[in-house]
Image (cartoon, rainbow, N blue to C red; front, side, top):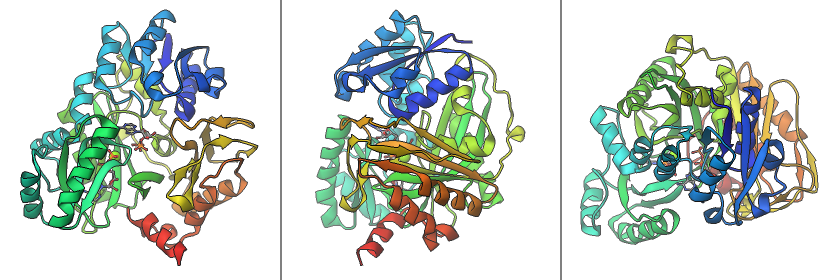
Length: 449
Ligand code: ADP
Ligand code: ADP
Ligand code: MG
């Protein structure tokens, strides 16, 4: 087993990983940017290194400095967390070359799945259903228009290197395609440094259903059930729950497809196979995330399996302790992402200083956050400031618990989405489970009236 791990991340996820390391008796090394000096992840780790300036490119994406910090502090391994370098194949490769363990899959797998158009191709060839769309990336606008008209409008132009809901454009017609094509390429270039795009048919009002998978170095691959992440704004998740409302037959079918997908890339570590599900119960692979996911706690709540612990065990070359038959699901879990943002102004991030803080507690309530009284949320990073997760015996019990927890939660000093989350917890569509990825957009229109 490893003795010391460097956590190449910040925020609640760095804290989340440090906590499991402590429980496993593993030493922890935090990294931070200048502005994060007082951050909780720095305070709670055994050691901490400043790896650069405030901009991510200077610090949390600074491969050289991060690996140096791990070597100086004599770490065995690096956990990349979520976002930042977690899906960077070059980082995974360099970590390995430095004689350290990368807690995640190998760099080749990260590279293949990180290229979303290539991932589509691999999955299609493996027999996993993918959304009708282009084979590979689009070489020029003429080819793009030809493919789009074959698929039929509306289509979605997507960045091959996309992530975090960015680099996606809907084209409803040939006219729109012209405009969207170049806009999508431009956004892809500025966000991801790669302007290649591909096309998918726009599935109308789908649900986002994803499967958590775990694979070890001995070829064992299992799934830990699914999460419904349909409540999204700007193609980014806001509320996630497990299990979803799919029936057992569909769960088996989709679960098998997820296993097939993971098996095909010989997946090792924790990963997520994302599908969209249309209103006729057809499901399509959209991408694989080769890392821990923001919403992993809902799976932990219903399986009672610590996913970070499993990642560390797998990276230490241990066999999975359970087979698919051992996995049981208990009750229902919901996560609300609490963001420092202005809901009524396009969900614009709102950094600032926390002037008053009260965190909820009680049976079945978990809150993952780096907030403390007086904490200054820096403007340089993600707007996610807390994850509120609840577990109940039934979905309704979980909803009631979430309402109660949201009522208790006070975060003053910055604009946030607590009230908005509360509103959703009372929305009849949400309560009935009658929603899809268009839910928030529709709700915003209702609120404007
Ligand atoms: P998840 O996929 O785990 O549900 P998100 O899509 O919200 O969560 O992404 C997780 C985090 O990683 C967010 O902070 C998001 O901004 C960031 N992120 C995701 N993909 C990318 C990417 N390709 N480039 C930069 N940041 C990304
Ligand atoms: P990212 O890498 O940014 O997470 P995804 O490919 O996972 O991008 O898509 C993010 C979200 O965009 C999905 O959860 C879904 O809501 C929507 N989406 C993606 N592809 C399609 C599609 N072909 N049709 C309809 N909605 C889609
Ligand atoms: Mg996705």
